[in-house]
Image 1 (cartoon, one colour):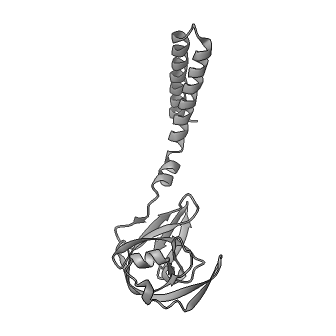
Image 2 (cartoon, helix red, strand yellow):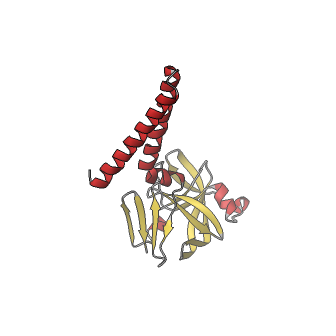
Image 3 (tube, helix red, strand yellow):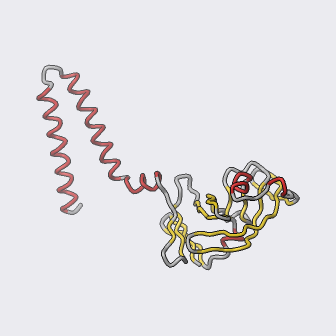
Length: 193
């Protein structure tokens, strides 16, 4: 523990002691009530200390976001609280949130996301099949006019629409292979073109 940490600890102990003394002096005639109040303030005090100590984790949980660097070649995706990596891409002018899935071969759109990006579901031919954790599902091949992440835009991108119960669209290896480097460092997935 360095001098700054020691000074901060001493300050917090002094502040806590002052609060305890004030409670005792203010409520000396009702010891039970004083004890309840002291315990309540102690819990608040510990909660504040815990929140300060865990602030970086709390901030990432509340608002994880992807970062696209100015040069346009690097995308950083923080690990979400559920352990997955998510990427938001502009597909045909509409934003779609994908789970980055190295186990998927293609970009796989849910029916809802396919509709959002302007694909006519009634015109699709679900003649393909894909093996998933939930069994075999039917798929329809499609072409996406544009897939944009930050300054990176790919045109005429092959994808499939899943006819099953897919809650999140998947960003599979066919798209990820467009990047020269895919690595994970300190809970961040880094894609480099």
